[in-house]
Image (cartoon, rainbow over all chains, first blue to last red; front, side):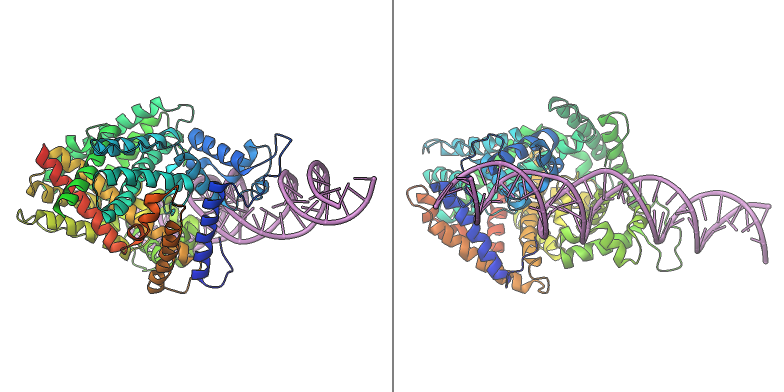
Length: 266
Length: 266
DNA sequence: TCGATTGACGAACAGTGTTCTATATCGAAC
DNA sequence: GTTCGATATAGAACACTGTTCGTCAATCGA
């Protein structure tokens, strides 16, 4: 991680430059890392590494995915991966790009742009859920991967169909992305926490576990000393009611309603 | 991290139980870990460990804080810490609790509940910024620490002063907490990225660095191929305009406006 | 067929969180 | 005042992590 380049500014510019190169590279086919026509099918490649990483994130959780675990599944040592992937951070970037490229956002219909927007955000969370662990890769990443850029582009199309002003479009993209990713990450941390205790169960039992925890948390809220927490103990039921979809649905409604309200008021 | 307890449900119940114990313990003075009247001032304690952890997070970033670095600053080995703190996760919990206890949310004024809410969220981010790295501790944590509970309690008071329905109150707390923490985490990751390259600078130069990156990112957006990204390239300036406060201010306005809109429409 | 490029890989380094075990220290009871 | 027992401390170690170095073998162009 330690660079020996001169100033931090230089390093930052170089980092951005790399990402730009990657963007244009993947978009127009001019790759820096030459694939070198692997006739023998078992050659390593960035694509295979990313694939294995995504698979392991789903099966064993983000934290369990290491350079060694990926290498082991590919039948090699960790050092071999570094010929195709610069480091763990770049691997996370590639994983994010691969997944986000699957998001499909509809062409804007000015009559139902808000419903389309809502559905798109729901779909984004659904995609994160299909590939657990991936959301953890996105935090703090400048969205310059081509797959992510396409998502932004098409989201903006929806917003503009709704007459949202430019500045609001731009900033809303950030807020919405952060919210969706945040929800996905929180769900993922919960999932991983129970994955470590019961490694045999896939995904259905996890729902049951979460119910148990919710029950416990509700009890805590309900039994809080009323003299210190009158509101919180009174709201024990609403605080813990609704499943993950209900809560996320409210958040999305909140964002969309806020967007409309801000646009209306100026 | 691996528990040997029977079922995952058991473990979950025990985890929640522990947190409840801690809540009531810190609230009413009956601590499980007896402080044992340390007359010699250089005795270890959970408080001192938390203090050092917060300090190191500020100075060297979240990732640089390890059990060893904390122990070293306290003039001991890492094993000694485990007598006062169960593990790294509990340490993060304690850090969060300590910091969040500093948040002051005003008594509700029904005339200006929305401005109070807005200001409270801004203050929360400001507090995270004063203690960089702390936000990273909060992801995926059930907010049962007493300090966090007080924040929730007082936020709810503001919301109810504005006539927000119970269910909206409860869910809004979650959305707002997640958003504020998410912004803080993203800022922190950026900060840490530049901290690693120029460890001598404190916080002012970082602003300049960020400006440089923003400039580069704007160039990327502006130079995207217009045939693939017409909207994104046209919005290059709005996408990258505004400093961190502007962007966060928009997000908060969005949340508050959405809350009012949802309450109004039912 | 020869030589050079380059992907693969074993070993190692400097870290991490955590646990075990022995030691030293302290409060309290006799 | 002395002894006893609980307990905080600390050294060493374990099983990991990401990453790098030097070497080796396979492949490709000439």
